[in-house]
Length: 289
Image (tube, rainbow, N blue to C red; front, side, top):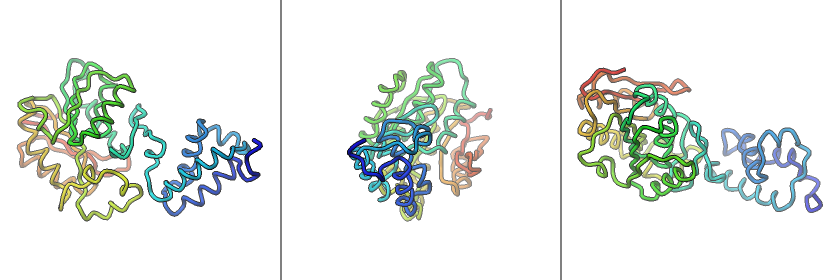
């Protein structure tokens, strides 16, 4: 295009961007490609196929602005406004955590352990963007999902995702843990509560400084919110129903101990695709599947 400089080809922009992001991103080239594809409204495959394509000055300027924010540590998902999770493209912003691939393990376990047929009642605690509840609802439209988050702003994001994706049958409630569902029982509870300790060094990882701290930090030990969920879950589960909890990679033993002390049976921990202990679960007064 006539208003582009000789350096503003796809190849040149991506090469410079990769170098620029090298110190701040674990995947600088991938981040650069995703941002440029977002700005140009095309796929990454198109960038690879036509590296010599010229980029006009306005798009190059927009790309530069987003690169500056990414170099400062802002999550890529906040810059593009979307994050893929399970089979869904979720809208995300600074009101919610960016859904992680390891959290998909909760979805997989829920689909594996619960009956596919019937109006299975599932409670999702700490729903954030709605990722877990919406993924389950997309796979099992007949299930009855209730999603709770103590952040009213997060619930707004989750409801908007449900509407945009056309997923019905998920009830979104704002409140702390079991507060919005008094005296109600469920066939399963899934939860991805905050599990970082206040001084956890991971809080300095790429992007975390931009994400809502209340959704990351549980307290001095990192187990406070998990303990609250475990302690209250028994009153809201039918006999034999599972409680499934995501936790930090070093917390499996402690979470299993909490579950056993609360009377859950067949307690176990499952590893994510990286081989890290990520989800622990137990069954209320019943054998596991």
